[in-house]
Amino acid sequence: MYRINALSRSLEEGLNKEGISYNMVGGVKFYERAEIKDLISYLRIIANEHDDFSMKRIINKPKRGLGSVTVDKILKAAYQNKISMYEYITTNVDEVKNMTSKKGFLALEEFVSNIQKLKELNSNKAYDFIFELESAFKIREHYDMLPDALDRVSNIDEFYGLYRDFIKQNTDAGVEDFLNDLALQSDQDQIDNEHISIMSVHASKGLEFEYLFVIGLEEGFFPLIGDGSDIEEERRLGYVAITRAKRELTLSSVQSRFYKGRRAELKKSRFLKEAGVCKGSLILEKTTSYKKGDLVKHKIFGIGRVFEISKVKREFKLKINFSGTKRDILASFVEKI
Image (cartoon, rainbow, N blue to C red):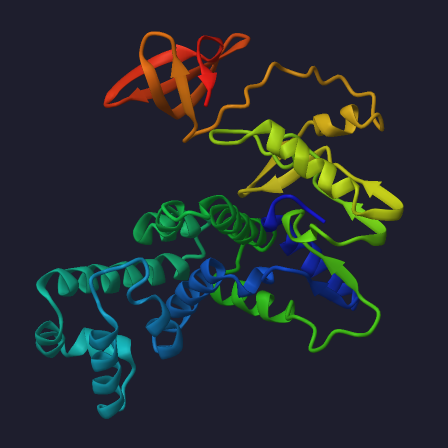
């Protein structure tokens, strides 16, 4: 069990390599997640621009003003000419221009140009390739705008980190080598009667297990820390996690983790100390139960909505919108409605 879905990747790969059956409960396997499929499709197009299956998936993702009808027209025309979509787009410019809006055509031109630049960069086996991919197509930025941005962006960061780690260990490798390596880590064909269940803490509600391992108990991973995080909600999830065990519970943390493409030193989760299983040296900080979107009441300014939270020494400062008037006020001067 884990708090952040991105941590499932290393578990899945480890279990696959050891030939141990597992079942993903209440979630989607790492390489089957939409944002990861998008990234793999981009890499496949750079490795082989004639891959129409991958092209169709990403040609309008992020959105480039190309509707499904336009994409189908391009695909049909390419099929009739017995060439790939990419080749049709690059060799039949006037026809493609007539099929698309002005905005869509310009976006498509930029898309093809970026693909070509990345193909050239890949041929030089550049370590910066994955940075340039994000800079060109802004995939992370696209998913950062969605309601479930935290999980999706964490998965993207994990994938980018995986690529950079692979290139560090294989300095002469390129996109094709990376894709071949992913293919070797293919999922098991079937789940045996005896298997390990892996899941996020959220997916575990209502379930119980004889033997339970909760991984990733480090500050920033469990609990999550940052803008919009609520330590009391994290603590509640911690309680949910540890109470899923019926007979034996194992809680684990690491001293460092390769995450987002770099090795980071980590502190043990405060929950280990609070649960009495670890002495540690963490000091519990004063926290606020406020989070973005909360309605609050001030004696003078009336009712407002919190839109940002920051820390000033040992106090929390809230940015509050009072009917269009925005003010910075310490948390102790308002009350939650």
